[in-house]
Image (cartoon, rainbow, N blue to C red):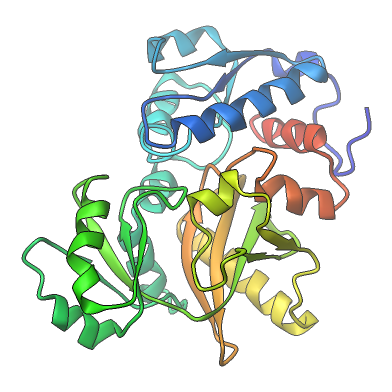
Length: 312
């Protein structure tokens, strides 16, 4: 078995009994099922004693029967500190970030406030309520805008707003996903994602939705086959290094660990803007972490082994 990044774990038996946790109750359940199934298969192919564990149908305390957890539970419950807290309490090693980074990373507003406090450039934003003066939001952030639920991933509930009169409907769409909604300045330019594994930024990926007037939405992420992914990303060496350094600083600021992904934009003036962090990124056939790992010479099975080895 060849592992391009040398792993401290040489034999599958060292992992013991592994629960691959995926599915769950969140709006990202369908994505989690795809990601988790791919990870489970990759681990089993390498002789790991790995089993699917779905908190929707199983009592979370049953995780006591396992030696470690590979967490592929996207969204609320799995990516927001709840599962991390349970596993920490039960003293079960787990992949990825702990309670603090998970809770922060799932909250787009507090992540951005932290980045601002650290002097890291992130797109200007405003929290919205049903009583918000829409004109004031437009005066502050301009048009177009992107409206987002604060506590969702996978671009769920997001709407691009081009005109003032579209704001109430966009707010209502996002509010269906939960209590907090934000407006963010629309950055016109190129979209990038930066995968981080073992405190190292991997080759930057440029994303190009087929409809370039839109954004990298749920449809583009999971269902369409005409989204463009570019490695090399088209940035100069200096710009790519700068974006990798900015992303690492953003990752560390949130106290993220192990593996994750930072999403960012470059505006038409060449400035970079951080958008958000993903502490349990997708691991499907369309996903970006496997893509970046492949550019580093690491196949999907090796990647899953390597992430799991972080728990030993």
